[in-house]
Figure 1: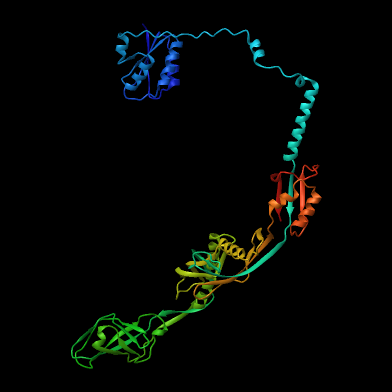
Figure 2: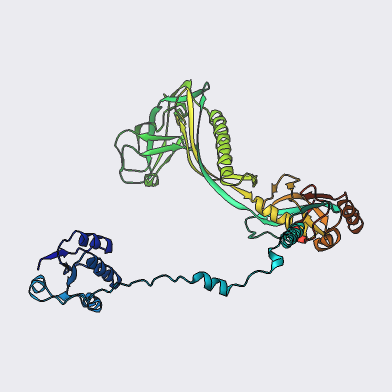
Length: 494
C-alpha cells in the first residue's frame, strides 16, 4: 500500500506538521523522527495529527526510538516502527472505527412544558393602573437616590490665621553631618580645575646684560707644595659676584708664591665690574690651599636698554589672569549646585597652582607678555534643602496650640555669610510660616448637611473663629440645599 513518508525537522511544530499532512494523498502517512534532533510534539499534538489524518482518509504511523514518543503514540493507538524499512514490511494494525454521534430529534412539547412551569402574572400587574403605579414608584425611588448622591457642595472656610516669623542663627561647616535645630548645618566642599590665559602689551624698558667683564686674578700659595689650578675654577666677591678662570695654571711651591690667571665674569652685565681687591673667595676644596684677590679693576661688563616686561608688568598681568580664573571657577562651581543653593564666596580659594608660565621669561626682551595658568579652586556651598529643613523644624516648634501650618515656608538669609578663621560660616536666616486655626471637618459636616446655604453660613460663623465669611458652592446650581451625604461635601481651608 502506498505510504507518504514525512521526515520531521527540529523546527517543526503542530501547525507545520499538520500542513505537511494535508499535502499527502496516500492511505498511509509515516512521520519519521530525526535521530539527533528534538521535535517538540506533545501527546495532545499527536492526537490532533491523528484526527487530521483520519479526516484525510489516511492512517498515521510513526518511526522513532524515543521512549516517551513511543508511549504517547501507543496510548493513542498510533503504530510505531523502528525504521522506515520495518514500516514498509510490517503489517499496520487496523485503525479503530470512529463512531459518529447522531443528535436526538427536537422535542415538540416545549411550549406546554414552559406554560406548566411558569406561573401567570396576577391581573393587577398586567393592568394599566398597576403598570402606572409601578412606574411612578420607580421614578420616585430614582429621584430619591439622585437627591442623595447627585448634588455636590464645595465649602471654603477662612479660619483665623497667624503669621510666624523666626530669625535663626546658622553655623555651617563641613564637620557637621546633619541639620540640627540649634542652627548647625553641613556645608559641602566643591573643587574645580580651571585654566586661563592673558596677555599684556609691554612698553617698559629693562636692562639686559650684553658682555662679560674680564681681568686678572692673583692666586697665592698657602703651603709648600705646588698647586694645580684648573680652568673653570670658581671665585667670587663677598657679595657673591662670581668669576671663572680661563686656563689651566700651576701655582709654584712655597708659601706666598703666587701666579696671575685670566678670569671673566660668570654672567654678563655691568654687575661683573668690580674694584681692586674685591675678589676674596675660592670655591671648593681648592680654597684650603690658596687665596685669591684681584690687584686691578675687573671691567668690560656692559648692559643694554630694551623693551621688556618688568616685575610690575608681571604683577599687573597676574592680577588680570587671577581675576579671570576666579570668575571661571565661580561659574563652574555654581554649575555643580542647584540654583537655590548658597555658594559661600568667601571660601573660594586656590588650593593648588599647577601651572604658571610667563612668555617671554624673566630677563628676555619682548613687546607682549603672555601668562598661562592652571589652578585648582575650592569653595563651600549650603544646600537649599538643608536650609528648608532647618526652617521647617524651627517653625514647627513655634506653632501655637490649636493651629496647623499652611502653605509654603519662605526663607532667606538676612546677612551675608561670613567664614571665620577656623572655617565656620555664620549668618542669620529668616523663615516665615502661615498657620491656621484647626477646624474639625466632622463637625462642619454635622452643621451644614441638608441645610440652606445662607443658614449654613450663619451656623459656621457662630461655631468657628473665621476671619471671613465661608463660601458655599452647590452643583447643580439649581439645587437649593446642601447634600445629606458627607462624602459629597468637600471642605477647603484657606
